[in-house]
Each structure stands twice: as C-alpha cells, then as structure tokens.
Image (cartoon, rainbow, N blue to C red):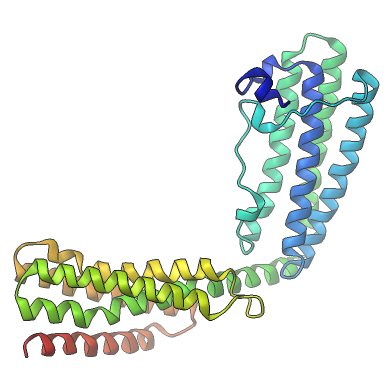
Length: 326
C-alpha cells in the first residue's frame, strides 16, 4: 500500500514521519538512477560523450542509494514502505523519459541539474520540519550529499570537450531537421500549393464565398489525411534516422491541412471580392514562409527558394483561376 492510498490523498512534507522521508529518499535515488541510465541508453549512438556523463551519474546515484539503505536499516529495520514523489505535495511533475526529445541535448542536461536541485531542496525542507536533533542532522547531511550531486552534474557537463559539444549540437540540429522540419515543410508546401487550384477554381466558378470555403476545407482536410498517411508509411525511420513514422506523419498531415486552411478561412467573409483579396494576401505570406524555412533549414538561398516556390504557386493559382472562369 502506497502512502497516497493509505492517507486517501497526497500528503504534505510536514506530515511525513522520519521513516517515510528516508523511504522517499531511497525511492527517489533509485528513480533518478534509472532516468540517467535511460538518458544514456537513448543517447549512446548520437551523443556518446554525453551518454558516458549520464552513466557516471547513474553510478553515483546507485552508490548513494546503497548508503541510504544502510542508514534506513540501521534506524528502522528491513521493511521499506513505498513512498514516491507523486504521493507527496510540492514535487515538480516530470515528463516521462520516453517523451523527452532525443535531439534536445541541452534540455536533457538541464533536466539532470533540475532533478538534483529539487532533491536537495526536499532534504533541506524536510530537515526544517523535524524536531529531532538526530533526524535534523541526518537530513542536513543528505542535503549536503545532494549539493555534491548537483556539483557533479555541472562538473560532468564541463568534462565534455567543447568540440564534442559542438558535434553533438550539430547532430541534434540534423535530427531536428530530419524528424520535424522536413515532414513539416513537405506538408506545408503541399497544403499551400496543391489546394490553390481547387479553392480559387471554386471561388471564381461560383462567385460564392461559402461554396469556396467548403471546397477549400474539403481539399485541405483530405490532403492532410493523405499526406499524413503517406509520410507515416513511407519510412519506418530505423535506418534513415528520420524518427518515429507516426510522429512524422502527424507533423506532415497537420502542416498540410494548415497550409490549405490558411487561404480558405478568408472565404468565411460574405463578400466574394474581399474574401478573395484577403486569400491572395495570405497565399503570398504562405509562400514567403515556405521560402524562409527552406533557406533557414535546407541551406537553400532565400532568393532561389522564393523563386522556385513563388513560380510554382503562381502556376497553380493561375490554373485555378482559368478553370474557374472557363
């Protein structure tokens, strides 16, 4: 039975007994060690230097857990109650490790330092709630240990050579481009350009804003679903390093739909000419945004990217107008 179940709800730190505080410390050290090993396992291929850092930190946490176990057995015996962070009020809710983006190496390192700082604060506050001099000394010693952990995290971070950090940063950038930017860009280009013809063909053929809106929404949503599934099924990402296929598919599908919806929404305006003028302005913004993304992440000169995208967009736009006026 956990502390939360026994008490009916989460309990505050001041309500914990010395035995429960020490049990929580043991559980926390074990959890942190697992988190660091998970970080190391997920980073060993792309960020080997940082993976070694986190394996060293996991080893440190394991050593401190053994010391805490010895202290607990000496004071309270062999049975250790299950007391977890989520059973106690005031702890920061952490994202599960599997939700952490592997390419954000800086965020992972920052999380390690945050974990150590939070645990140290816990020991300091727990010591303040205890009236037993021996318990206060024990918790104060644990706070000093965690201060050493935090210093270790900073030192291990500093131990990674600058050239290795630069290489890891570039690797992270490439992974971000492969897993997020490329599918997003493909979707945005398809949604922005491919839906131009049906939207403006319907607009000029019917001279009715609502009809153009319905056609645009249907084209945008349909294109988003199609592009999303196509991207997800094109590559499992295991060999290409492009990441989880369904994440890429979701990004691509949403951006495809967004690209079409952008110049469809103006047709909610009842006046056809006003709606068309606003839609054309939005199309220009969309094409410039695509050009900027290609220049920023795909190493394509902006003018060349703009020329390629704008020419293609104008051709599709003209096609829609010609068909709509036929």
